[in-house]
Length: 122
Image (tube, rainbow, N blue to C red):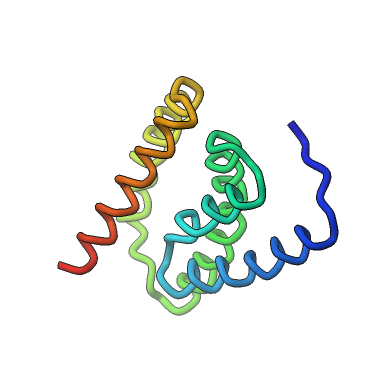
């Protein structure tokens, strides 16, 4: 499902992209938690917003990783082992995304965002 974007939506997406990229670069992740609500506000359903967020985060994460690597902040063995698990989890998550309703997906996403937020506070 492709959506025709008007000039206002394009401007919102570009400004949002700058903000999300800065957040992801600063914290080393978390931009997807911001992208999904933005896409929902612009009219995408949950499944499309979640899937689109993953693709949006790929180039942002690659750019951030290059900068982090350049400054020596990346521990390669951690990347290797965590990457293996992340790829497996990504496949499982993508398959589950197809099976969940928009309502269930909203609920799960809200719970995860709240749990991460609470965990970061304590």
